[in-house]
Length: 460
Image 1: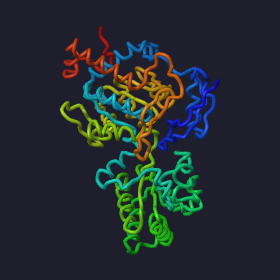
Image 2: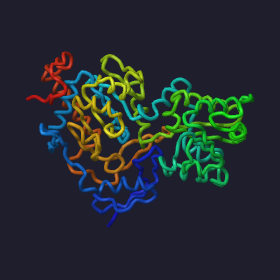
Image 3: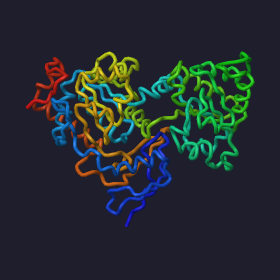
Image 4: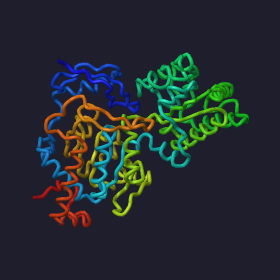
C-alpha cells in the first residue's frame, strides 16, 4: 500500500514550507503524489524518481570524457586535491542541510580553504548592512498573525517564493488578522509591474536603481520634513500616502529582496531600509526581513557564525584564525583575481551563475562538483560526486528565511551507495587525516607548491 507522509518540508525556496503531504510507494523508492506544494516544489520531489540521476562519481579523462569511478577513488582524489592546493575555495550550500554545512567546516580548516556560500552573490550586501545597523526582524509567524500592512520592496514572491503570500504575508488569516487579505494593505515598490505588484493596493514604480533616494524620502517624511515634488520617479503625494499607510499600521512588515541588494547602493540600500524600519517604530510597530532565496541559504550564516564567527567569505588559509573581508575573500573576487587553485562547488551551480571570466580562471585548476543532479558546474568539473537530496531522501535541519530552524524529513530511501553531504565530507576529512599522518609529502606540497595544480594531484 502507498504511504502518506505528512509534515514534509519543501527543499525549494526560503519559505521552507513544512506542511507538505507526500504519497510514496510502499517500498519508499518513488514519489507518487505531492500535496500543498507549489509547482516547483512538486517537480523537485518528482525529479527524485528520475532514473538518470547519477549514482556514481564521474571523473574527467585525458580525452575530455567523463568516466564513472568508485566513491573510494573520488574521496581519495578530493582529499589529495585539497591538501595539495595552496588556497582552495569551497562554495555553494544553497541546497544542503546544516549537518553537511557543519561537516565541511572541518575540511575547510584542514585544507586552509576559503569557505563561502550563495549569499556572497545574493544577500551578501544585507549581511554588511546588518553588521553596521542591526536587524530589527521577527518570524514569519509574527508577520502572519500581526501584520496589517505589508511592504514588498525589490522582490517578487509570487514568482520567487510562490507560497509566501498564501502562508505568511497577504492571504493567511492570523490570530490578529482574522480577515486575511481583507484586513491587510499591501504596498509594492518595484520598477516593474510584477505579479506581486498587481496584487498590491499601492504600487510605487520607482526609477531603476534609485532605491536609496526613495528610502531617504520615506525617512524624511516620517520625521516630519518636506521632500521634493518627485523622488526616484515617484510623486511627492504618492510617497506621503504610502508613508501615512505605514505609520497608521498596527504592525508594518517590510520584505526586501535582490532588487535592493543588486542595484546601485547595495548594502547602503539595506542600511537605509533598516533605519527606515527603526524610524517607523517611533510611530507604530514595524519589522523587516530579507527574502532569502534557497530553502536553507540562511543555514550557513547560522552554522558558520557559530563555528567561525562569520556567516560567509571565511578565509581559513591563515591557519590560526578565521578572516572575513567581502571584496577580498568573496568567491567572485577571488576567482576574478585567479587566487584560487582548487574549487569545490557544493549544492549550487557556479557554472551557470558566476561571470564567465571567473569560471575560466577556476577551470585552470582542479574543479570538483558535489551535487545530487547534473548541472552546468558538474558538466565542466574534473570530478562530479553525487549525493542524496536533502529534504527528499536525506533528513536534516534547515533554517527558514526568518532564521527559524526546521527539521526536514526524508520521504524516500536514498539511492544505494550514495552518501549524504555530511557522510561524504566526513569521509573526505578522515582521508585527509590519514594522508597527513602517513604521507608528510602532502604537507610540503601545500607549502612549496611542489605539484602543479592544473594536473591530477593523485599519486600512488
